[in-house]
Image 1 (cartoon, rainbow, N blue to C red):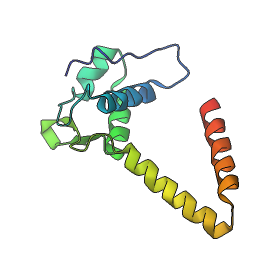
Image 2 (cartoon, helix red, strand yellow):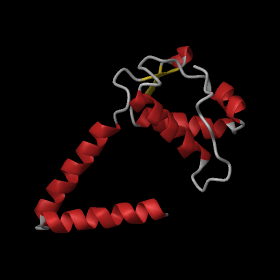
Image 3 (cartoon, rainbow, N blue to C red):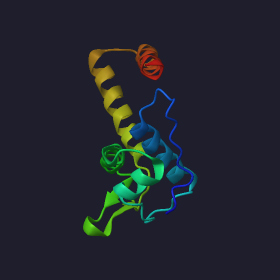
Length: 125
């Protein structure tokens, strides 16, 4: 996979590993990276993008944790068969949040306000 579509903005306040992670997820969602696409090795991608190998390794670890990629031992890392699992993870988090809000007696409107505030705080930092 040529990584020519991956661009790291060194002036961005977003850390390079997060830029890489989010760009890979976006490429999977758009279909640019199909399931079972083999990714470059950590070293090769780091060299191509001018990043430290630890930066790329962290992005790969987080992508694997989120089930976007899977590592197949010495064969390398590939886009997971079910691609981006973030929607499933988000739904599970939403279900858990809703259940907890119900336990606490928080109304749906209050719960939405709380999560909206939290998302706004998180996106501004």
